[in-house]
Image 1 (cartoon, helix red, strand yellow):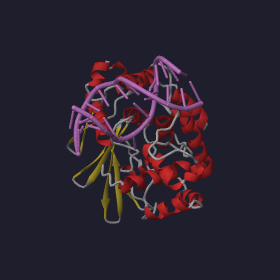
Image 2: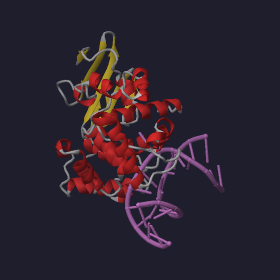
Image 3: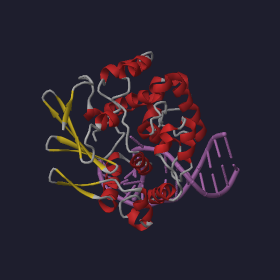
Length: 290
DNA sequence: GTACAGGCAGTAT
DNA sequence: ATACTGCCTGTA
């Protein structure tokens, strides 16, 4: 247990974990618990700072997970050239991108296709309960995120029983690629953007959007710019000059490439942070609570 | 009953 | 290259 006050009062872990990047966090008796791979992370607000602890790690995990080593001042300074983002930085000073367990991130966003947050959480908790390891933390039961080999060993019927529906086939394919196909996501942290993206796009069930989410939220590619329905709407509202698609219109793969590339050039190396501000804001405006 | 929710792959044009 | 389609499942 340690208290970390060195990162400034503006950082807000609760906002960050509730900004749609990660799904397996819950508040229990005033503390937040989150599943990240094989670990259970915990933090609780105390007078004088936030107290972080972890089931596995002896040292602090928060610098890694909340990307506190990013030069956030530089991120803000870089993005503040854009009027829209400058406003959002002021509005949500505590928001940070996360550095998640890559495999959990991949399976999470494979499950996220064409559904909503409550369903995603249900699918992932079901998978963990059925295929993860049981852990007792603060006298409470948690389940770690299943390994790729555990998911690869599961039958499609078992996966479907977790509520995955047609996503079961994609989860199985991804698990196989990692467990048997030699795909090492950790290695892709050191790869160039395009190399990493090409690799994850090979996986059945992973398209442009999911690939960009994996790159941004777990593989340190801060210039990745995922575009889902909500971001497309935000772009129509704030950046219609930069592209020509209509609100709510689905993007063809080619349109996606074109627009994502334009936004990456517009925002530069921290484009992913810009995407996160836009996403969080439009969801707040839509009054989505999750 | 029907529409819809944070995409994707397969097929036909 | 683009358009169209089906897909699990739960909720409104």
